[in-house]
Length: 411
Image 1 (cartoon, rainbow, N blue to C red):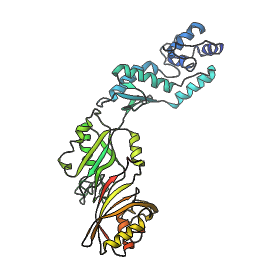
Image 2: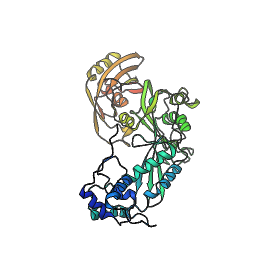
Image 3: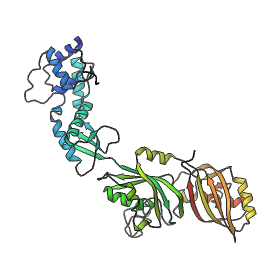
Image 4: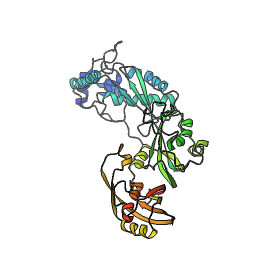
């Protein structure tokens, strides 16, 4: 059973109410002077209760409230503006806020001081609450701060409502089977994405990417304005991502449609993705999943094909010297333009030769997250120490690299 309203009219409350009379306050603002006194009443309800003991307020006339400027009298107008501002977008949950003239907020503080109330509720949260109620009554959506679809900000000095459409998050795992496909859109280095002769006006270094192929059906269905792709790390462009695939979160920006059949869309990557990208375990996600994906650092398993003039026995001997031990890797030459130049310590967990013939051999290995496999094999002019080429005493070249598994669900 809900608690009954309580509003004890102490001498201090009554005295403050009498001092507030004649200040041309609307019922909302008068009641808010005592908004933190008692519970279970609306602010106009508090005002009515005080009228009975402190005497009714003088007629307000046509002048707007001296504190809110008539904002609470126009709540229905603001609710209508809010709903119209969000037209064209599907939304079932919302949060509303407001922006006020600082001078009006200062006026409120001054009135509190002059009246001598210790129980005032600021008009900003009160307005937000009452506006939320009016929007709920108007369109049936649910107001609150828990995962809103839209944020409605009433800009009172300007007289408009600004709408922030929250993203839709989709998580899953992708398998990349194409050795010519980057993970994300790669802007043309010459024109930086604007379009030039070098990129044939596309603004891109590569025609497409995992992000673009994966996002296409979701963008069409959601009528989204753009995407952000968050992967649990990334593989080299010429490396395949096999096994269960790489975890990712796709962020759909300013979607107009939110009711999506994710499984159906995951199966509808289209002809462009056929034989190149596959999706698994697609499901709805949240912003917290983005953080989890970006902060994860699981071990990874690889298969690397190596060419070099060295016998199997020498390779096995070299592997026995590094398995279970750490290596120092200075930022590789090939990524030094976009990563800070420092030494990172990584560990080779396991390494086994699974095939060898005619100056070529294949190694399956498991490493800590962030290990540069090609540099560990080839040495990168000594920037990885120890490296396999130095240990076998012969130049080595990586012919191919596959990510076999990302061990994010272990432990």
